[in-house]
Amino acid sequence: MTPAAHKKNSQQVSYRLGVDIGGTFTDIVLVGPSGQIMTRKVSSTEDDYARGIVTGIRDILTSVDCQDVTVSEIMHGTTVASNTILQMSGARTGLITTSGFRDVLELRTLRMPRLYDLKWEKPPPLVERYLRVEVDERIDRDGEIQKPLDRADARQAIERLLAEDVEAIAICLINSFVNPVHEQLLFEVMQEVAPDLPCCISYNVLPEIKEYERTSTTVINAYLLPVIASYLDSLVAKLQDEGVQAPLLLMQSNGGLTTVDQTRSLPCHIIESGPAAGVVGAHALSQKLGLGDIVTFDMGGTTAKASLVENGKYSRAVEYSVGGGIMAGSRLLTGSGYRLKVPAIDLAEVGAGGGSIIWIDPAGALQVGPKSAGATPGPVCYGKGGTDPTMTDACAILGYLNPNHLVGGDLPLNTELSKKVFANKIAGPLGLELEQAAYG
Image 1 (cartoon, rainbow, N blue to C red):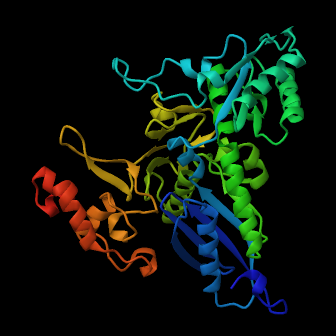
Image 2 (image 1 turned 120 degrees about the vertical axis):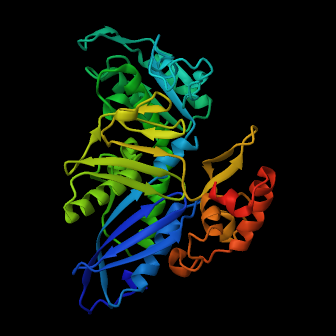
Image 3 (image 1 turned 60 degrees about the vertical axis):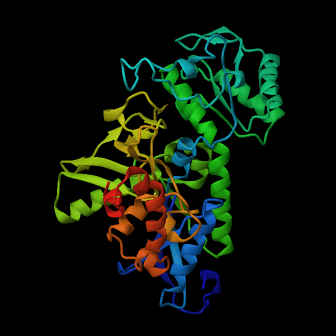
């Protein structure tokens, strides 16, 4: 039953929808006018996350005992952006920058996770060097044009990247935060040459000093543009097909809400969307309980997130890093990931969750993550073809999980499958009893 199918002449009841999507499960919460709450959990559909969301919404609206349901607004937290970076699955991106600044993205800063580790390597740049193109222009620190950008040079730089089949272009010129005229010229030429190709300029993304942070943030924004646009287009279209016309608002990394149109152009602001929503929710609960100081912990199927609420307030970071196996706010910046200079709730996120794969390293030590079985095929006990033991399988073996409770009983767990795989891949090689190996 969808809102479009409800009778027009019956009394309408307004509901609010909350949607949280992770790499493994999608959670739907429906809040009624009197505060009543209904929930639904479904498996995330990795090939098209919007399909899983709409399935959950359809199921939960069907369960409402009312002839005519009006959804007034939809609030959405998502990990699509962060997972895109962590899995390095974003767009093939090109970068146009000022002559002499081609390698800013790769040189980064002096900050590094292990100062005296000579073997540590920086994560690969999101834009390879041959896709970083220079233009001969210069604006000084006061915004005065020292060397004008020739329109022909701008066109040549864009055409060079187009010849490399880039899927998005980031434009970041030196000192453009005080005078964006050359970036705007490049964008104007871009609209003439390839109007349908996603493109962003640093003046619109982060008009602030600090060359590496501005370049990195702009590149990440461009890297996400096609992925997030495709995701939102699919979600909005499917919601309309279901007759849901309510405005869709997305959780930002800073804990606030933003619109679909704004997110299409600035996806860098929703990278911590899902994790931030968890902190905001925990903070609201702590206020109800009269607790001023709490540690929030949100563990899903793919990642685990933690943050602090002190004196009744959660702290915000002005910049953070994503990638390198960890996402961290300003308190924990290590230089291991990709720098983002946008406001965000200060938290840490690591690749360890219920779907994290358990494996044995070459030295014979037991390891967990960061790779995850995700929703498909998922843990072995799901019976969907999974072959790698996960944390969920270990918990099923130890009896920590009710085999008939997951997803409201719609996803029964086959513990025998977990035992068989765990015995072959973990307990046997380690020479341990099954339960001892599962306990770790």
